[in-house]
Image 1: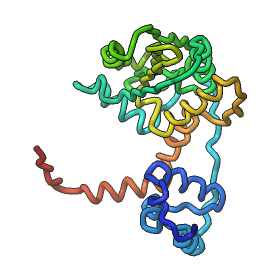
Image 2: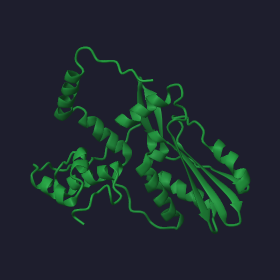
Image 3: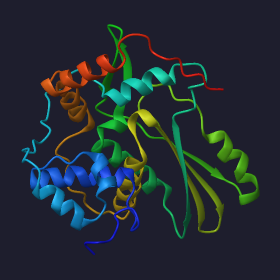
Image 4: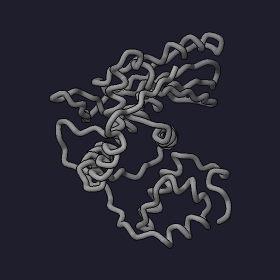
Length: 262
């Protein structure tokens, strides 16, 4: 209903970000993310949108093929953090799924191979080029499904040992494991590095994995993450970003107080 609170019916910050993008695309109005929290009902948002100026939505362009590509701000940050002491495993994103019924492990492996062809991030490694981290998208990668025949009692140490550090140069930054623990009972393990994934991405990959395993066709993707990164970095040079930089330089001018936390 138009008076229901977005966050009371299952909304959260990631869904709010998606909502902002969809409103911009359909209505040509750029709502700040904070306003979704401030005006969390359709009724309130409608009144806000009616009072706002139109800001034409522009699609992210597809960039030309190259040996290396720019990284996004988030990827650059994660690249640096991953190389700090203690960061080796801090940005792994492991997951586990219990599967019941007849399972073909070759089809599991094939489905993830199809995902790698579909999503360039699953074929991406990160290298320093002239002192700057860059993306390198490989034409092909090989997924090897780690497989064990065991039982539930002995599965725990296997699961604990599954999460290991990634070498960011080596694609894919995703590993897969499958444990056969009983008749028609399996545990699917996966571990991805945060530099190529987030909570939303993992949900998309799992959904598409199920569809591909079933033999379903997926509609082609118009853009890849490298296109977004290039678009974002081009925006960093814009007048809007210059104003942002000037604002924060003013805020932090002079002596900056030291944050003393235990």
